[in-house]
Image 1: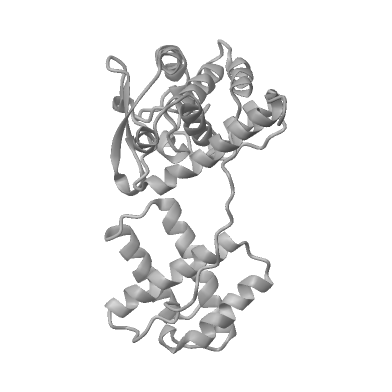
Image 2: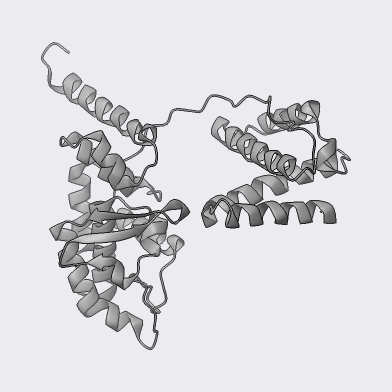
Length: 299
């Protein structure tokens, strides 16, 4: 890549880290999208980002569609590039934003996948055991379901973040926003067993304050949590590949199905906007419709 492009990319990424305080995952995604766009400029023999006009933006958009990119992916890339040019307009390195007039494709409405309560019971049964890793897995699974926290938030939990006497957990979410979430009795019991017995055995000679650890005693990663969850689902013979947010979706859906109000669920999930939480109402409506169709005599 051209040195000028490399410097501009580095400058923008630094801006996202320092001024916007974006999460590691979001920054990684922006960096990947921008590298792809800058490679496109090189193929098109465009030497500076200021030379890009609306026509070139449309050509890039066409290339994305020809690659069969999903609409949500295209929308994300357009949003990223708008931010990129908006920043360099602010820095007076470009005159106009070629992506300001490029329209976002309509997002695909995908309902969140979740586990039914019967499936959750089966998964909890699979987690039972007296071995240190089994105790850790149960504590991990119980906590994710009890709190609805993101996998990335779970990986970052420190020992002092859990107040067992008050049954609350301090969670550091996106943009380092902090929130407190209640922890249910089942999760607390599992955490007590893990912290008292399993974690000291797994830690060995390691010394750190991360709550969840791998079999070597090191802080667990988001990838490690994903692997554990997939292993639990496979052992339960549930024909489903778990994704990072699935227990979060299950947490929200079960709360709403059992009568929780939307504002409370929004606060528990750490959503800035109610619209982010409202997608779960579509899931619960679909659940009600399926129940109606299955049991009403004249459905």
